Length: 108
Image 1 (cartoon, rainbow, N blue to C red):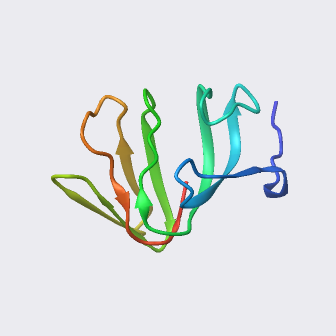
Image 2 (spheres, rainbow, N blue to C red):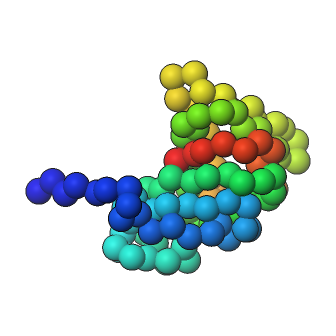
């Protein structure tokens, strides 16, 4: 069964680190909080530089929709730009320092 999800119906909430907002498109279980979701699809707006929020035991895939973004880790830098959609993964298994957002843009 198909269901139409309108952007006006997305739940909007601040990021855990306060540096932007996220709009939940879908999640499981429906209405789950940022601490108890099994999976979720969201659209985020980066408002300012800051630490990349941790989600322990969650693997994340970022897709840059517009603009550019630089993620910083202790020993590397990841530059993301939009060229046929750019993706980055943040693995829950990684024990390294999580990246820091350095440019304002939208991600999903």
